[in-house]
Length: 225
Image: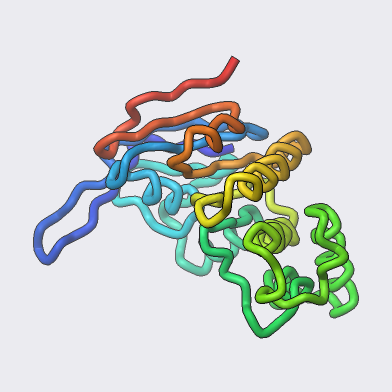
């Protein structure tokens, strides 16, 4: 599903190049639940951004479902993101002036489907995360855990094959974080591939595979028994 071969990425601080990824090679199969860990500056967020087609590698190759994505245009990358990937971030990124169901509908606004079908699909996703009774509530009327559930429903409304999560429990208390991870585990059992960055060991414990980065290279890659 996800294949990276000798991927390099650097940024510039003024005129000084700062290497971030230094030859990352990974193969993530369909249906895996992968946690990426590492200290600050290890390259984990940059790696996740490349996997999520939010950033472009400098050298190496990236294949998603057998298709090369490292030489595509921004329009092509945007189409891949919309059709194949769903995103959940630490900050929920909900639109405050609209209610939960309309927030979930947002990824469907550019598709050629009727408003009623959009709402029906959004309601189905809210039901999946246990929030159908809060559909008409604004983000301000929801707890942090509930807002993250809305964000997950929004990420799923386009039926992605891969869910990309960047510190999805970082803004939540322990109980809410565990509830979110139970949703992730249930989604993974349906066949959705999940790639998640986290710094919390108890959150990473939900994953079936842990990849640990340090200084831009893979320090450890371990599957759980």
